[in-house]
Length: 302
Image 1 (cartoon, rainbow, N blue to C red):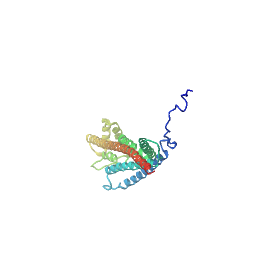
Image 2: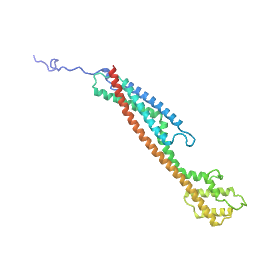
Image 3: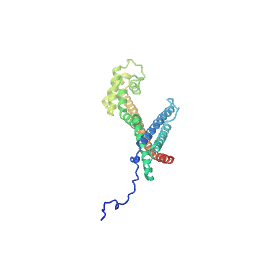
Image 4: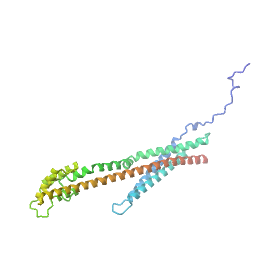
């Protein structure tokens, strides 16, 4: 009688499947989350410590305390150390606490350990960024926006708030220039009318906003100056033109200073962002390496 091709005698003998039901999932999420929690906690503690050490080195007194360059360099170094220490701890915990994989090739074990460390680093980084979102936003974006706003509004803020207000001679530098128009070496018979001072301030403010001193305004203010100081019309107009030039130079210098400060802030922020990128990249590598080390040690000891 012919033997059926489906009979057990004709089937080849198959080796038993080398699979452990406990190892069906290649990721031990409990170990990953534990490593991420440890890394995030250590990172938070070290960042707070760094803030404390940084603030303690700043002094409100002149020529005391650390310089801005020293503080910036130390901050970058401290953040790099924080990232490496926290990532190393998180990766080691993720590798050491994961379940043991039996009947798995050694290369696959190395890959899984590396993935555990990387995932622990990623979750810890996201958690730390979420907790410190306000500080990160202020450090990376707020300083640039503030510097740009200062640079753009310097002219208007200086001209409108310092000139057009009815300010006294000692209250601000521009008010000093307005009052200097009416100085006279001769005895003053009548005091300057406050309304005249306000009018001159408004005219100068408008001329500064326009960027030029029209001849009509110069002639009109010159008449007021000549009447108050006994100067000739030509000398009074020259004083008006000189005062306008000094005020515009003052505002231009303030604007230049603000733009330089904004540019320095932009460069410092870009420099810090590059270093943070390098530190995060190094942290990811160290977390994966420490997870591999922790996993090897865990398999060796069991």
